[in-house]
Length: 67
Image (cartoon, rainbow, N blue to C red; front, top):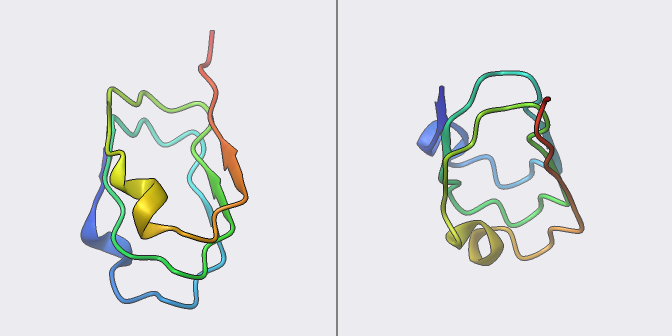
């Protein structure tokens, strides 16, 4: 239900697809190589602004809300 330090140390990770997981909060560690994040169809209530600092090469961010 939350994403935190689960991905710590995965410095070569380039894509993370977490759609449809009922995630309610997210705080990502340093992921310097990540270019794509997908959190479509989750229940995000809490979002850390640090994702943009911790993922400096982020190019694609997918967010949506299921109706």
